[in-house]
Length: 387
Ligand code: CA
Image (cartoon, rainbow, N blue to C red):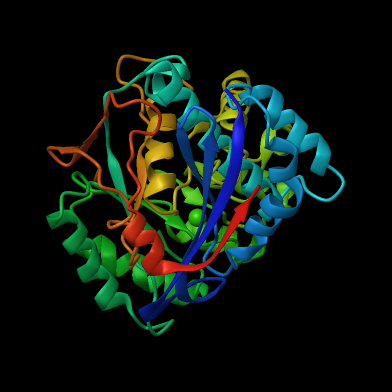
């Protein structure tokens, strides 16, 4: 089997109501989708993660100008070999960010092809499912005004609970005093025996503010405190790990086995959060999971992409071993973003299967998705057909 061509599909749509996370206002939802075609007629789909403030053209350009020319003619089943060829080719100008997202999207599409070629879901190729049902958590609590929204956000927590969520992640990083007000308002509205909270400040603070905020949340039984400081500040991560009671999480802005190796060596995180669309795809996620296992670090992937990234993340989460085994071991949960995403639900003909508010694992080959061409066309801002 040979790769015949690679298409990138850049999707973008303005949001009716822009919202903020701590790093800025999001006015568009975007995605960089990758379609890899083969001489057998099999087609694989992948997605390069496009952060809320990132333009989707960056990863598409890396694919178009760097990776597609070297992949045409290659055997798509050579997933490990091609991953290292792409990484080595781009080492001097890549390793992080959008270039790694480009490699990730390609790698996801290659595993989708492999699954279809072998007639197996990706989770089977990864070594089998540790779980057939996956719990979701609601990521929400974005800001519409920025500050002073504690009342509305507390009502949002009630809405997520009524929609079946037992885990929720609150976006913080809008000033420590405002953050604390929000958390106290939410705690008053939820029953802590039924709802578990996580928080995410998207590295809004330096160590002192991050510590102060963490101490104010010390009795809220948080499952984790995500990106409390800048991704580069390993020492800050370590200090917060030493001084705060809750688990410290990070890694959505880290990449590849090399990046996560440095993060783990520093002892920076209790929970690693690689994003399948930017850590380097399934191939890198396997490397990272093995490293994490050796270091006693829990892996709970980050997910904020379209239906393609969601489908890939479900395959990965199914195949993740627990870091600390017991008969009641804590299981990884799927990030289920509640913000507006115009083309997420309309992107596939195969919506995520639910069973009692849990995600039921599918046995369909590859990623198990069928892409709707009409949705691609509706939201496509640029399509580069690469030969
Ligand atoms: Ca995050």
